[in-house]
Length: 232
Image 1 (cartoon, rainbow, N blue to C red):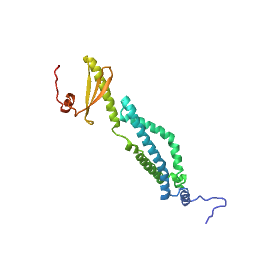
Image 2: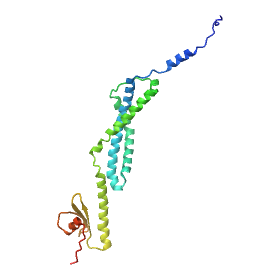
Image 3: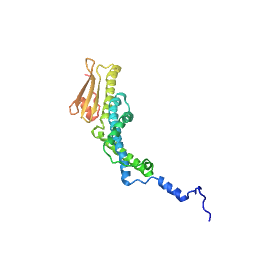
Image 4: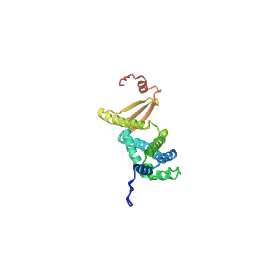
């Protein structure tokens, strides 16, 4: 039988190629490593969720109370401005949150760069990020417990009522050339009449009359019937 000549290399077989591929493939991560990897992603994103939602809610509510009443913008518009403030704060506080998460002493995953490219590690990071962000956003909604949900609407209605009062009392009096003009609005919640009138000195004044009083105005407010009083 012929033998290879000296100095001639024999090409390796398919079995040698398979052995090289097995040596290059990273070992699969353990469940403990996947848990640690997901936890490292979840904790900082919990902080991001808390900060993002809390700042957006507080800033949006403040803008709605101030600009919403002053300029008449909608609640959704105020929420959009609050989200802008929250995003800007997130850019500035991102490093602070990450450094705080590093000081917590979370368990290290001890994954290699090759292992982190595996599908299992990517899924662990994705699930940790999503879970942390959802949990953080829920915690960031706690300021809602200390807010009056109807305060914004009350202030807007009050501003509309002020504009209505001023328009009727001032403009209607001039239009009708009336010596006196008053506008009375029934407040069912407080069981009273809110009256705005023009005083002798020209200033606009407010007065409140209980519906239980026996007067012409309160009787009309309670019964809804028209009472015509002849001139005397």
